[in-house]
Amino acid sequence: MKKFNIEIEEVLQRIVEVEARDENEALKLVRKQYRRENIVLDENDYKGHELRVISE
Image (cartoon, rainbow, N blue to C red):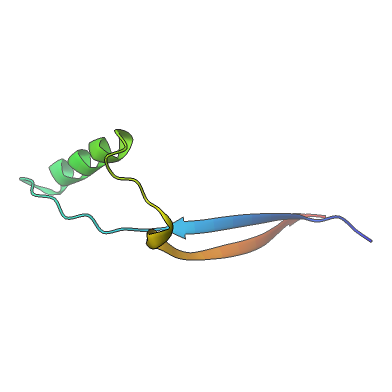
């Protein structure tokens, strides 16, 4: 039998609506909320997964 390293990647995704003057400000506001853990993705935000063989 051989041993394999398999990478598992899960994708969590959510659309967040925010009011801002422009796109840059909107990104900055959401980034700040995310870093402060005011936005936390969970199992309800699950969009899928991928499996990849990394090495034998």
